[in-house]
Image 1 (cartoon, rainbow, N blue to C red):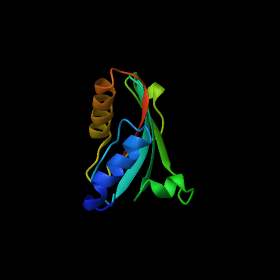
Image 2: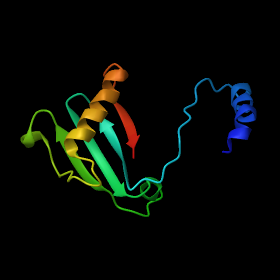
Image 3: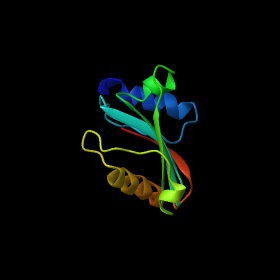
Length: 110
């Protein structure tokens, strides 16, 4: 939404009872996905481009499970893509988990 509409939109949401909003810069991703993040493992689904194509059923995702318990508990492969490695993604997602006091969660990433 254009920045000049922000004050009116904030007032509208506040009057509707919304207490928290995340505002972020829109990007055109080259790779995006959703991660089901737990302390011991991360289940990943990802697609080339925008995650919307996955949500709309227009694309089938790649899938992998990364586990701190090792290869026997992992499946699939997250091959480095567009500069993103499995290690960097794991570290980022575990960092998100720490911020939320290790409560398991779903994280959309791009």
